[in-house]
Length: 138
Image 1 (spheres, rainbow, N blue to C red):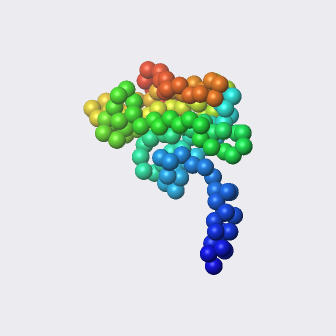
Image 2: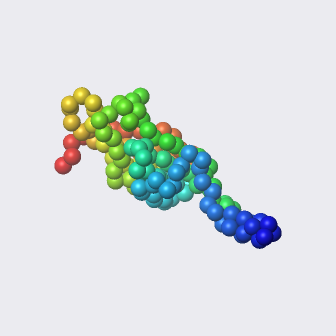
Image 3: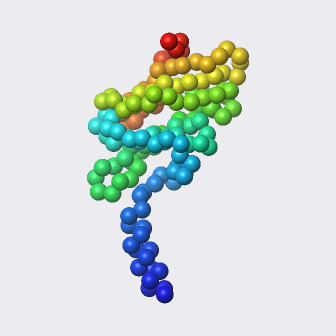
């Protein structure tokens, strides 16, 4: 019986995907991947919070996360306590990086603010989130 258990362990686990330790894929509400900046990138949204996780994935050999960026704040304020609401929309993979719309609603009653943002990716490396000034939705 013990041999069967070990054999099963070796058969099942070599095919299990490599995962970043901090990501709970069972709580994912949206996952997508694409080529950007010469790299394979993936984003993950979860039901648990308003954060957006961006990962650069190795395409050589086994798939593994090479770099990860966890976007849970904006302008020094955490999404969970610094805003009434926050979220990411229209996420696209482009040649120069990942482009998206960041929607934040400040705690002050000023209404929703939309910003065009990008996460540049070059040579398989990400830089931080870069956003425009707020714009009005048409």
